[in-house]
Amino acid sequence: MDRLNGSANLMIVSDLDFTMVDHDDPENLALLRFNALWEAYYRHNSLLVFSTGRSPTIYGELRKQKPLLTPDITIMSVGTEITYGESMVPDDGWKQYLDHKWNRDIVMEETAKFPELTLQSETEQRPHKVSFYLEKGKAPNVTQTLSKRLENRGLDVKIIYSNGIALDVLPQAAGKGQALAFLLEKLKADEQGPINTLVCGDSGNDAELFTVPEVNGVLVSNAQEELLQWYAENARGNPRIIHATERCAAAIVQAIGNFSLGPNVSPRDIGDLMSNRKVHSPSHEVVMFYIFYERWRRGEVENPEQYIQKLKSVFHSTGNFVHPSGIDQPMHQTIDTLAKAFGDKTGKDFRVWVDCISLAEVSLGSWLVKFDKWELSGNESRGCSTKALMNAKVDVPDEYTWMHLHHTWLDDVGGQDDVSWLL
Image (cartoon, rainbow, N blue to C red; front, side, top):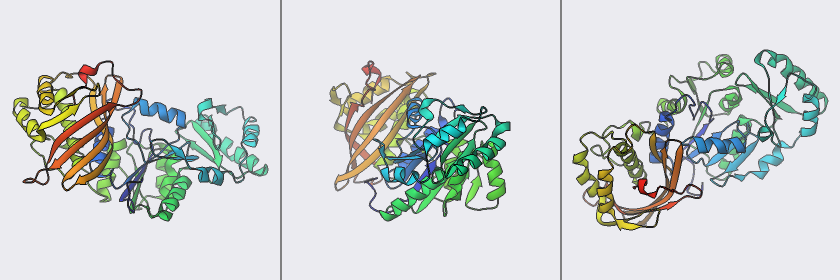
């Protein structure tokens, strides 16, 4: 967030399961489309917020399983925990705010009197969240009775039922909507409040997000019954909230276009990336190149022989590439190696994406670009911290020449197979 010099251009606040992440899409195509769009056009001046019912433990598990970007802010445990940045620094002020009229021990005492409630795993029990499984048919009666009993004990709580099975007991001040409202006030006080905010969800615990003033909202096409019912009763006809025709992350891209929030054509939607090289920024250049790199190795580039010289015009003849193994070699030698690797991942589950792009203009027309580059091959993902030095072409200012590229293995994801990591 330190990269923002003022108000964020756009803040996207998205649920994860079956909103940003489509668990019925094993290739993660919609998520990868969103990733490319965000890193190419939005990362430098906007904020990405994940708002999930998941606890930190199972949120971390999802990050290992899916090609998720690193958010600027993470709201977890149904809005009871807010953390910042890649290191997930907790917001202690939010913790203190939630303590009002909350006593976890009393919640445990009262819920133990309901045999219909089954405690979820220990990882899902948090300081300001107690979570259960509950059959759908029993939910209305249990929710109503439990709420009265806790009120009689002097607590002010919120009970949320979602996904047709999960019941969460939270402080009244908690929840995804309250957490977002708190966050927006904090950003506004720091003069980083977003110009536009887009909230995205699919289930009952997301409903609060759509009640925050002045936000735009999208229900994904695969939204669940309880959220659709809320929409029908509270938001149908509201031009600031739409029910998308697309699923999951594709619905988020659809909403960006619907509300005219900025570019909504993902670089992954462009067929011939090397011929259509209208580049808007070094970020865009990085994203476009690594999508081309993925397609090259998957054997999806038509007439590949025509592209080798184009690639060599993108990478400077005296430039060098430092492989994560530490080997330093001329850039054009690396391109020759890449040429021989055309189609070596054909028929395999091979995907490439970039994350956390940051830019610094080190001299006029010369850019230092930092990012994490990830490769997924089968069930194994590996990543490198990457630095690239690029110069804008004097005769073609919307194109860039890569002068230097340096990869370093990220912690715990280094490769036994250094040979297959080409660029």
